[in-house]
Amino acid sequence: MSVKPSALRRLSTLLAGKPPGPPVLESSSLANFLSTSKEKYLADIRATPSKGAEWTVVMGNEAGDLDSVASSIAYAWVQSEIQKKPCVPLIQIGQDDLNLRAENLYALKLAGISDPQKQLLSITDLDGVKPFPSTTFALVDHNRLGNTFSKDNPNTSIVAVIDHHADEQLYADCDPRKVAPAGSCASHVATLYPKEAEMPRELATLLLSAILIDTGGLVPGGKALQVDHEAASYLIPRSTLFSSSTLTSISPTNPEMLSSIAEVKRLSDALAEQKFNVSHLGAWDLLRRDYKEYTHTLNWHPGAPTIKAGLATVPVKLRSWGSDGKLERESQRWMEQRGLSVFGVLTSFRDTKKFGESGKGKHRREQAWFIRDGSDSTLQLDDIASRLWKGLEADEEIKVTKHEKMNLAKSKDIPPSVRAKTYKQGNANATRKATAPLLKNILESSE
Image (tube, rainbow, N blue to C red):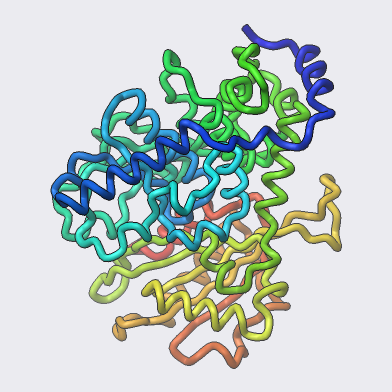
């Protein structure tokens, strides 16, 4: 049954006196599953490498944000514990990098995962293992298998894709294959959860946390779509927001009703506070914290070379952390380490000098771009730069304009082998999910 708005208001009143956020679980079945699956997987591939082929590896994208982490854990749980197939979630960041995202640690702890560096299988655990020891993959929060996993690994197979980014039209035969708009990939994962199976409360809390942080707390008029409301309505009564499962369903027809539940709002605020708690991070860590990587073939360029491009999202304005050459130096350092030819730094922050309707400061975005030849001396940097600048400036969705206060044209920290430019972004609602396909189109189009 659906819960009436009046019942929800009474519930919110009862919860109002509780400490912020759901209770932290000291241990959980979810934590035990993660530790056990990691231990068994590593034991198998170390004792008999060919056993890696018996496992399905579930991965989010290389940014390692909460959506990717929660979605990979949840889908791996379903496959392993409900479908009884050997399955392990892999986090595509290093163990040390887990500490760069306070919101991840916060949500994982709420789900009883108190030591994620030991409990989660990360890319660090597989350092030096070449080729990748498994051939069967399920992709969540992205829909293209990275080269790291397919290189010298010809028998790779994609058995599932669940995502909310631009569809690259790959792996048409996998099942499930759900690539559709949503505020959070975790919403798709939640709606695909077998309805006849009970969901652990800590898993519901983890998925709900990902949805809340990706949709700004499910606020009306925000990033949340109908699928997010439906998923949240399913997860809320099953999560640790409630001490029992007396509520079996909540209607998603009134989005404002969901976001106004006192405990939902508290959890949303706590996650947001953790997400933007980056004052302790320097430029280098900020660039690594939320990073995604792509490969593009320049069909218009002589020889049609394939290059690597990266996009880093930083929740602080450029001048706060990138002045005095730090932006230029650390960006080039990161490009060298990753072998990038193109690197974009996308900022998202609140301008406390200009308050919007939220009273939290007007939402702003900026972009900084760097182009280098790296090891490929045949790249025509000026042609790539001209093409990129023209494409960005002509796009009617992101609406960029020249950034006068962070003009890199005369920077002494930009060597002759690098091209760079910064912009203010007029459309603050256009995220990396808008910029990434735009970059692909600019670089790959033969026109």
